[in-house]
Image (cartoon, rainbow, N blue to C red; front, side, top):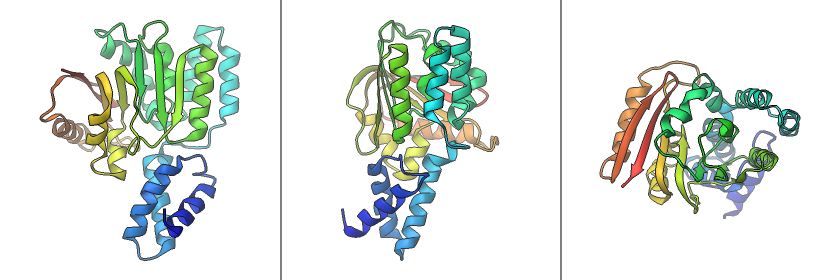
Length: 266
């Protein structure tokens, strides 16, 4: 790492908004922006803008993870109240908030023919592991979750431990270091377009390196502002290009807010 890049990573990491971000991702984006910008200050600003696009835009406000975990602990022994707490917390992140209206049927319908699912990899997971109570997984299933926010993965690890889930949440830049585990299924939910904002080849490389029998790949059907603007058609084309030439058997599921593809790797 050059002195200037190290200076940029330090500066961005000191910002309250980005202090919990994986430094490898900051370094990856910062190096590119330093090469593309005329001035250091411009590179810092553009790095922060890109980090906002790939992560920060999904949060309306800072999440108090200690309070969130306390709420989960308080309702743990009441299944209905616990599920409602999970729903309330998933509403704090745009990606999982958009899935709440279809949550009761999303995993049940898509994964119905795959049971028993004994292991999951969740790439760029956000708060998706909180949907554990809705997932038709085998008893004792393992769950490996990855995200770029250290405070979030710390919270998710606490969630796993609270429920006694055989789970691990890890902070990682999956572009540079894809998950190594072998799993029955990998969740790649509304993730690939974000990865390609950082690196145009990132989606294809990630798919090449995941060790899973099935992939659940999804895309947003609407923008964060709620507009459709041809997104289903565009992302269908995007998926078809990624699938071209691969030994995949694909089933398509279209919901009001999400387009999903269940892939069996043959």
